[in-house]
Length: 354
Image 1 (cartoon, rainbow, N blue to C red):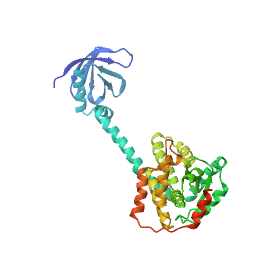
Image 2: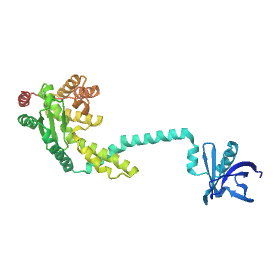
Image 3: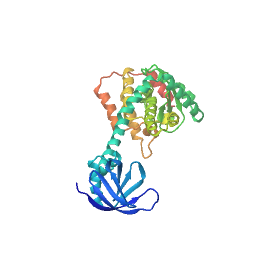
């Protein structure tokens, strides 16, 4: 087998000074050169190759300080292709050789995998975590949250008693204890804590015009409690963070994630699925109690009309979209229902509006 002559720089590992040497390159076998009147033979199986831009570095495996550097593109290609044929290229170098297209595809694949994980796996995990988590957990988080908020909330005790009585006339199809309170606040808002405390701002009471709409609002929030949406969202946050912390080693951050989410449960932005589920739950509650379910559609329409330039908080945490209005219409028009007058609800609603 013939060899090819070329020139390179030799580093002996003792000094930083390179020595110009003449190389004999025997493809797939060895590289030979003279140094200090001594012929050195570097067999391919004894050396490693690293290509960096327009330079090839050849290093002794047993002594990384001893190396060759070659800058001639033709010679680099000759040696490098021989090294690949002899399978003497590291897996890392092989990956680098795959080029930009590979990296682009790999990046897209990883991002897609992460997205699919968050869309499908984490919601599934949160459902399983919620199933094995006792309801007492919801109550403790909700109690803690309410205790922190109580000092800054202006609760209208009289209207809260009326709202509680109003709600007592509705079967919300849940065994969970529900507590209803009216907050003196002009902000158009209503939200629920995991312990079943439903806070209704006076601002939203001013917007609704009949007891059917109020029943629809309470039914929606009660369904969030019944289906434990707050805890499911918390479980999703924890599940996602567990994966991230497993990759980064930041296990201690899990507790701060729990605390951060637990402290903001009153401002949770529910997913579209959770909102649609609560809308459907509200419809079923209205239907079971023979309250006209058009109150749900009317409620959404009113809030949508009042949106204006500044989006009310209820629209940011519970976005009222045309899709949700159309979903309510679909429920009403595609299902049979019977509604009857509810004089007690009518009377209590009138008292609330005073």
